[in-house]
Image 1 (spheres, rainbow, N blue to C red):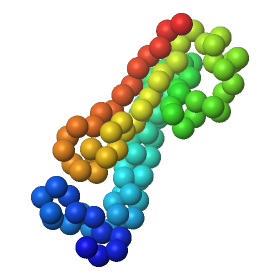
Image 2: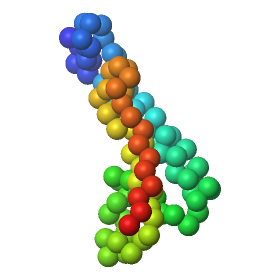
Image 3: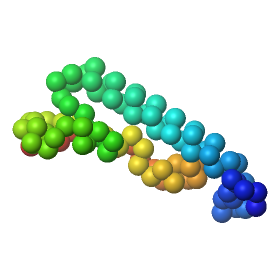
Image 4: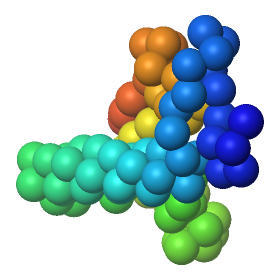
Length: 96
């Protein structure tokens, strides 16, 4: 197998791993942007938290929020790369 290449379970190449990861990162960022922008437009007073932003706001502040959106724009990255349909987009409204 060539360096920087992977094979899927069928033995067919997926192409460059770096190219796949770059595409994945772009897809995840775009999904996050679409979800974030839509929620912010519809519910401007409800904060949005993701895995990447959860530490941007201290817990002491977050625990005072009555509501917040919890978003995972792409859960199951490996499955997404494999294109097996076993990934999810998760959006939840949390009430405390």
